[in-house]
Image 1: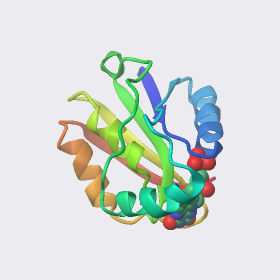
Image 2 (image 1 turned 135 degrees about the vertical axis):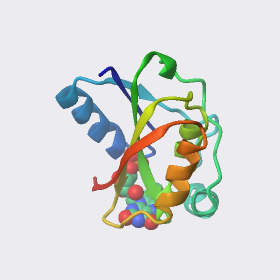
Image 3 (image 1 turned 30 degrees about the horizontal axis):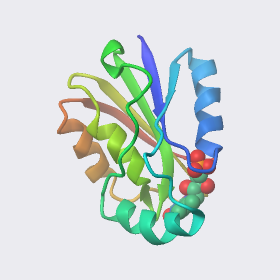
Image 4 (image 1 turned 30 degrees about the vertical axis):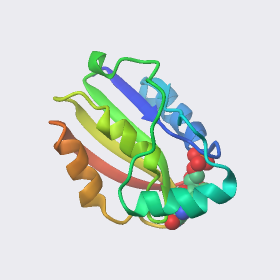
Length: 136
Ligand SMILES: Cc1cc2nc3c(=O)[nH]c(=O)nc-3n(C[C@H](O)[C@H](O)[C@H](O)COP(=O)(O)O)c2cc1C
């Protein structure tokens, strides 16, 4: 199955994890880049409330066409217990009919609101095959 890993990484840990998985699983890789990167303090005081509220932060157009893949693995860090807001922008860009898996990196905590994240992808017409929290 042709698989694309689309990841957002603020500090580089998710990027490294995504690169390892891509190599191991023979998947293609695509980085989602925010239009406006938040400075460190902004990630906590602006990004965390946005993550907790399920808000999206705009990203640049992706360098790979998700339409060309059967399965999309979405990776990103958890912020305040939820996927970082740029991850929501990746979900919002999903074409219908894709198999989707979430692999969310953390400092050790577990994601909250899995259902909200999964529902966001199913609302796009995608089938969510899994949601994994992984310590980076
Ligand atoms: C703004 C911010 C909020 C975070 N919130 C959490 C959290 O709620 N729980 C947790 O376990 N880790 C939290 N972390 C740690 C990151 O999720 C973790 O280090 C992640 O692997 C970083 O990935 P990255 O380097 O690709 O950005 C937070 C990190 C940042 C920068």
